[in-house]
Structures are given as C-alpha cells and as structure tokens.
Image 1: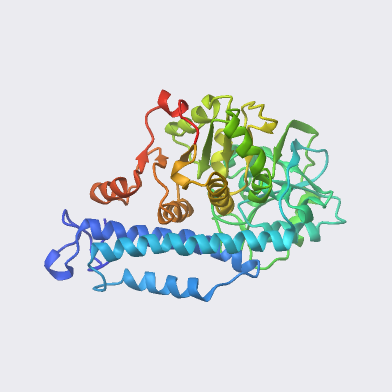
Image 2 (image 1 turned 180 degrees about the horizontal axis):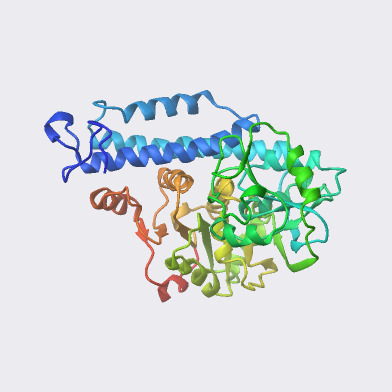
Length: 429
C-alpha cells in the first residue's frame, strides 16, 4: 500500500513513519475509497457534461474531496467517513443529471425488441458507454450503406427513440467487456471503443480498433474529435459480415416505464402474485465466483421479478424468465450509467407501499469490479440502504476494520460461495 500522506511505500502501520504523517492503514483505506468514488463519479459526470448537464456544487465537492486526501490535511476517521458518504450524495446528483441528459437528447427509453447477431453487409461495432458517440456515428453513417451494432453496455442504445429511429442501427453483437478478445476477432469490421472497459487488443483486430478522446490502447487508432469518417471508410473495405441471427431480446425498462406500472405492481404484491424483487447487476468480470449472480437470477422464484443493469446483466439475461402477474419477470433497466433508475424504482415503490426502502421485498446482489461500482455503492450507502450483497470479494483497498464499520452501519455483506436457500424464501411487505 502507498501512503498518500507521506508519499512513500507503506509498512505494516500504513506508512514509513507513523510519527511523520500520523496516518494508519484505515485512514489510508477511507482516502482510497474517496479517490475511487471520485473517479467513478467523474466518469458519470463526463457523460453528463457531454449531454449539457453541469452542476457547480458537484464541481466544488470534487475539489474539496480531492483536497482532503492531500498530504497532512485530514487524519480524522469520522470526517473521512463523512466525506465517503458525501461522495455518494453528490454521485446521486450526477446520475440524475446523466439520466436527464440522456432523455432530453435521445428521448425516454421504452421497451424494445432487439435483434442480436449480425446482418449481411459491412458493419461497425460500438462498445463502451457513450451515447453521444454512437449518435454522432449513426448520423455520419446515414447514407454510407454500413450497419452499426452495439456491444456490451451500448445495448441500451436500442431503447432510445431518437437512436433506434436510425434503420442502420442494425442490432447487438456479443456480450460483456471481458469477452472482447474472441468476439472482436470474429467481428470483421472496425470497432469503436468509446469509454472504459476496453481491453488491450489482440493482433487479430488491433488495426481495426478505434478509441475516442481519452480512451486509448496500444495498436489502436485514437479519434480526438467526433469525426468517424475513417471508421466508416474502413467498414466499406473490410470483409462483409454474414447474416447470423442469434436471438431477440427485450430491453428498455426505464424507471419511468416501471413506475408507470407501480399501481399494477403494488396490487400484485398485495395479492401475493409477486412476492419479491431481486436486483442483479453491476460491473462484471471474469472470475468464476461471479457465477453466483447467474444462480441468483436463475433460482429466483417464479413469483418474483429480476431487475438488472450494468454489464452484470450478461450473467443473467440468457435464462427464460417468463411472466408474473402479466409482467415480464426480467426487466433490463440499462447501463451502469442508469443506476439512478434503479434507485428511483426503489424509492417509488417504497412511497407506494408507504414504507422505507429497507422494508421493501427487495434483495440487492451487486457484481463488483471498478470505480463506477464504488460510486454507485457509496450512493446506496448514503441513502441508508441495508443488506447489500457485493462480490465476489471485498474490495482490496478496504481494510478489515473499515469493512467492519460498513457492516455495522449498513449490514454490507460479501456474497457467499453460492446463494443460500433463505435468499429465495423471503416474505413480501
């Protein structure tokens, strides 16, 4: 561990000389939580700013929170914990801005059936998270005779009215980010990586990989502006894709769609038709322990609804869930960028039932991976949400003492080796 206070390699106490900076590993842990949370919030804020959404109070908090991690500024555990939760508070505002920016620019997402696979002809694949990039690409490729496909967390693009109005937004190809090497090798056209969650490319496709702005990888071509002409021209020169339909799926359950059904959902819960809700999502990874989330989705009782968002959805979306009380049992709410929607649904249902979020028949199991996940978790903790399960392991930058504090205050849990039976034997409100 590296000490942010004395800026030297840490020993067992958390720094080279505890007498110099007065810092221990638990303070270091809280500062790292702040830094990772700020990184995640900055990613969301960058998307929001590109959509015209800014907030001076958020900007001021980022400056102050970063200042609190500088050398010889803050040695107080209680104050650091307060800043950790304030990060969650301001991230909630950033996610609200991002939701507003998306809906104002592209329309409110709506339930949409998506073609998965490829269609005959040249194509471009877009991965990452940035809807502005895919909108620009679609506009520029309008008359080029080139299809555009989404990959990974770009899947929700198909649910925005102004994006899906483009007939050359042809479908979705592939799964989560960690499978890029094989999936990108098999895709014959150029690939555009718009944000984080891009892997260093294999030789088999690095000459076809483009990145945007600050996203960059060895061997790829970085586009600094919104001019995608070279991508479109390459698509025309590459081998055309074959006609290969894999399946169809339904996405686009924006929080406004779900809350529009609130009366029906409440009646179904009160009548006993729906007994529980499971939120299964987050940031996916390659570890075997992440099969836990697949098991939660597949074993959720037939009288329950499974909500999902983030690339964690690819762990649970291939199961046949069917319906309950006339509603789809599996509701895809979008990207990790759409986490604000899941929060709004929880708050909306709590209001409808006249109870707290913690009294809802709701279980949250969140796949843990990177900085955006930190920011979202801090928002949930700021809102006082109890009993969240994260995994497959505790974050490496959280010390046992700090994790104990989070367990005591928020009943935060690490997922078990496999979902316990009691997870599926939960009562309604």
